[in-house]
Image 1 (cartoon, rainbow, N blue to C red):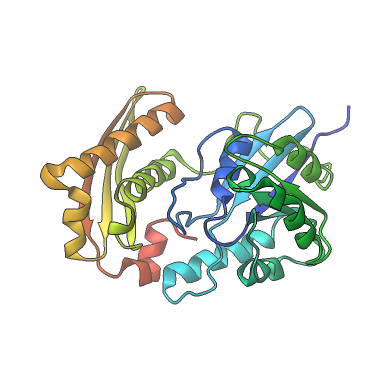
Image 2: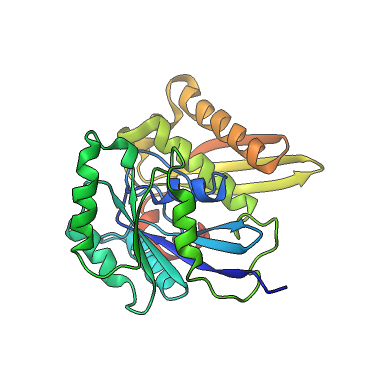
Amino acid sequence: MSERCSGQIAIVGRPNVGKSTLLNALVGEKLSIVSRRAQTTRHRIIGVLTRPDAQYVFVDTPGFQTRHGNALNRVMNRGVRQALAEVDVVLLVVEAGRFDERDRQVRRLVPADLPLIIVVSKIDQLPDRTRLLPFLARLAGEGEFTAIVPVSATRGDQLEVLLAEARKHLPNEGLLFAEDDLTDRSERFLAAEYIREKVFRLIGDELPYAVAVEIERFVVDGGLRRISAAILVDREGHKPIVVGRGGEVVKRIATEARHDMERLFGGPVFLEVFVKLKSGWADDERMLKTLGYD
């Protein structure tokens, strides 16, 4: 019996084109957090899909920053470049009906010898579906691509077609991860990400981009996980925004994050969340390493 093919597949694109939603849909679990806010994803996150004939190791990357100045954005861009140096296939995600110089800048990062599949995301959100075919023709005129696949990650449309295209370019070298692995990230990391997602979803544009989550305690006690986490803000004036009147906002953040953790971890979670001032964390290389930024 021949070995299953397996390989690493980078998911790249400019911010807010649907990369994380695509990863989650492909692996069937919420590994990468999503929100309507651009630049939600900050880390490279691996998601593993194992099938009888192949193992797909997807590498979700932050949206490439074409305008960046602080250490956080420099680190995120470095993560995109590193991912592209280590993979077998690249999925360049672009938003249906939108393709501009920002997308071209990301495309230019892809090594010329790598198979490059254009994934046209959010086709279900096109107000006029007759615009799709002309848009695909326009993309085809942008250069030579291995394939162009329109998808809707939220509805699951065309995902099997995308997997079939990617599989053609995976090496035949056996499994890279165990059969039941979903990701290379720890539960501690995922807990922090779930909390950060709720901050962005529940507070939105009221809170500046400079917010992070630090897990201060993560203890497994039998089937129970006891977690203590700090939401880090950059300015004193941001703390009451996160806490909310009578603590209602931070309580809701904790409750919704806990529900997500319990579903993924498969057991009860005791979660304590509080807010801490940490000025300048987004431009402090040492602090970024402490928070798990590559």
